[in-house]
Image 1 (cartoon, rainbow, N blue to C red):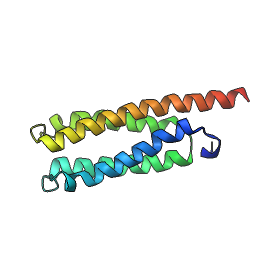
Image 2 (cartoon, helix red, strand yellow):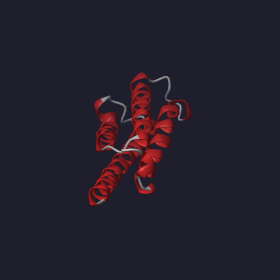
Image 3 (tube, rainbow, N blue to C red):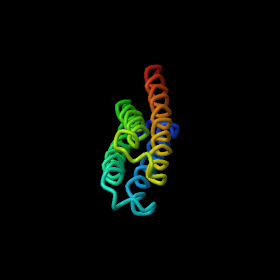
Image 4 (tube, helix red, strand yellow):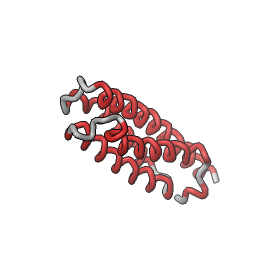
Length: 123
């Protein structure tokens, strides 16, 4: 399904995750943890994946993109403990906050896709 037929409520979550993905990618330099491999590579890899998924989601209505963001949000939130950087305040807080936002926006996207699908089933 083309995004041209999708309501704005579907597109907003994808634009927000794209903006957050860009922030996540540049955050190691801005917040000063680019020299620490685990949190930096975590931010770079997750940032790129979410950016790619967000761009794909802007072109096509599908729930899988939003579920990817939900899963990556959960990963990002728990990653400071798994990758042992929970003691690095800037890196950990960044992962926790952006992870929560990815999760919540992903859920918003799932709900929006269901609304789009229901709208198309009625027509």
